[in-house]
Length: 173
Picture (cartoon, rainbow, N blue to C red):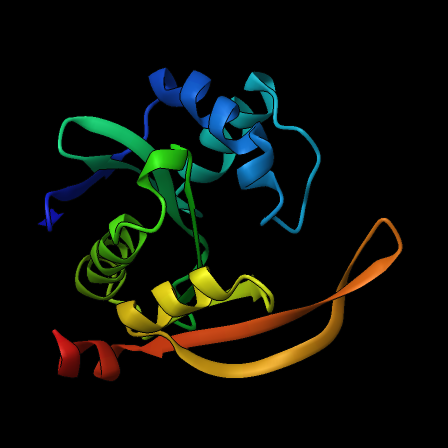
């Protein structure tokens, strides 16, 4: 799958070192709800128990020949035909260049086309304006704001919930 020179490919065990490095970078971790450092063992546990079982579809994001981040569909619920979307761009130089929006569109194509889902949703810190704009460009719509939904070191942070439905995706594709 390709959009604007951006492709995604399924992750493998061999991607563990990059995933761990990126996920633990302060510029990535600050946008995650769960901020416990990721270890190689933790990632391999995720890979074997969530990705390989089909509960999660996770991909490496490639900009041309270079791997620059990861995108994933988690908690895939085939009964209700929905999942939660997540992404991180690990390479600082690739942020703000449309890579995340292109990767989101590719992941949505997989969610709606390959998996046959009806709904994809996400949660994002309300103050992460760049991410919200990227999600909107990919087709996600604002669904609500949960005030002080997440506590980090005793401070409450608002979360924005966004989603996209299959018929909305088909109209824009």
